[in-house]
Image (cartoon, rainbow, N blue to C red; front, side, top):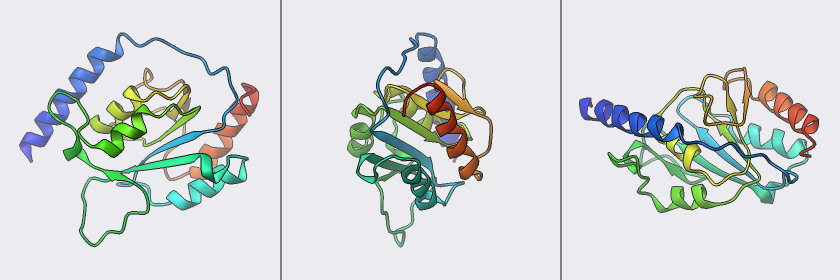
Amino acid sequence: MFLNYIKDFSVKKILKSSLQNVKSSSLSTLVQTVGLLIDASYFSEKEALVKELIANGISADNIKIIVYKDKFRKSDAHNHPAFGAKHINWKGEITDQQVNDFVNEKFDLLINYYDVEKAILMVVTHNSKAQFKVGFSSIDKRLNHLMINTNAENYKVFTHELFRYLKILNKL
């Protein structure tokens, strides 16, 4: 248990030093493909969140979901690819192929649906090839292009604000 805290601290330190070299990019195309990174430790309404995205004009075929879990149980059925803290090494490198595939996919929009800073979630967000990243304001400001000030339980407020700002930015 203690080693996990040291590993988490080490990975966050590596990540924060690499965040100082972040270049800002702007989304110049319309949003068609969406990546959804969810922390299932605190949020269990995945399907309802996806329905909200579909209701706002995103095609269900263009939404790719990956789920983070603190603990895995053998009895859990996974509808979406899932990963945990064991899928990152001490150097801050992701060791799971599914997570690497998700990170390397070029989404038009990446929704980082977690409001508690965890090292592996921050690494996935930072390394993602997505053109435009959206998340919560409680997370490091250098990771996301757009931050929404709410908590993870209010997914309807989050999606309402997200699509309101995407329309203002002419991304829909």
